[in-house]
Image 1 (cartoon, rainbow, N blue to C red):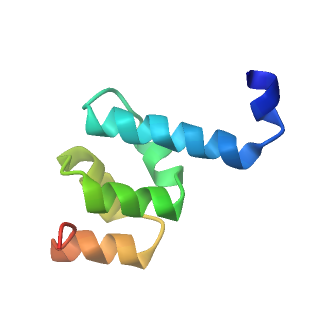
Image 2 (image 1 turned 30 degrees about the horizontal axis):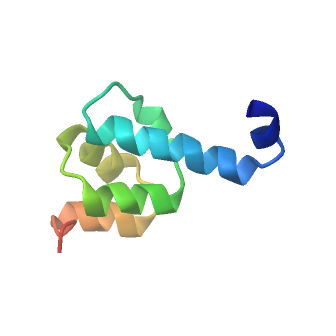
Length: 79
């Protein structure tokens, strides 16, 4: 399976982000740098879907876009 995936970097990235989302949602270990380096789409998904204080604190400080940081600063991530 790895051989099939290695020629599709977009798919590899999506699978990695899915596993990161799962780790954050289930309170499993994850690295702040992984969250900071994840795509804009992934960061918005976490902001809009999860209530994990640690992940939201990381994104409030180091989110890739102003949209993510502003949403968390205002506290309207579940609007």
